[in-house]
Length: 432
Image (cartoon, rainbow, N blue to C red; front, side, top):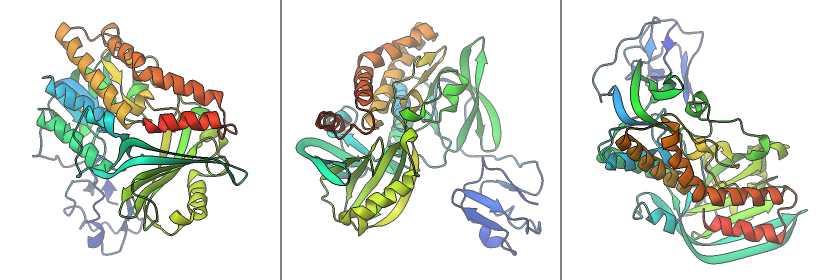
């Protein structure tokens, strides 16, 4: 039977149209070969990636972009934190490799895409190309037993709802324009380690495995961070510190284009909240997060019930669905080891009240890049040297994260319709 190399397959579907017995088909992000395959081999030469073969061996892939064997800095994961770290480090003159396991940076989107305008301005001038909507007001509805117990409305805090697929790619492009190397569909499968010191990464790129040496590695590979786990820096999350999330992009809804919406309701989202983040032209990210140990149903079931309950949303149609988990805990400790730092969701750098993490990741990525550059200049990339990154984080973003975690613990599920919590949540949401 024909075999598939998942590391190469781009899930383009071109081979499906060539199969004479319909033994090939796409299952969302995977190519499936049915046992009815007659091994005619017509699909093999049609694969643009060399992912199909009649035997276990693989044809070498030649041409394309080059992949060096040594860099000052390797960044794993091209989300906002990783891409910002690569961009800032490249501008500081480091040789940088930014790798992303997916074939398209920014996809799939796994957040509501909201950021405060002031914080974003520290990095970039706003561009309509990657901004869906500008928002300057919000409403928070707190409900208990099917009744509204508090309705809060505010205005004046400017923010944006991004197009993450474009925004993330733009950040990676900044890294490339600054002199860094960016590689997509490149998986990190291990670390180069000796005597507890990280000296690079093992990658799978275009069907081949390489060791890439690096003076410093930044792990920005998400909540599921394998790199952090290999380095012994990613402790297991508690269920109570995990939000299980589902989100639709709804089209055809009746919602003001400049207003964020939040619902705190134990029936709708136990231990969490539901949201509407408008994207203009009758579209919005509509989702919710449920505290994992409070969930009695799936997050998608809760989301469907919420959408059906709200007339302004129920008239819309879902044109995309995303799901995932968000860590709502304290940042990891430690965030560094010899030759390696954690950034973003991999470091649990997320606001525990709102689950927002884009700006936090970008700020942490910038801190990590600057610390890496200073460490390389001094010739010392030890844990003690890189600990400057953790010190800077804890004295800035970490303080707010720790405060909001304490507040979240102070108001456990079932007590979050309390007016004091709603007020605190409003302050946190205004800064996400």
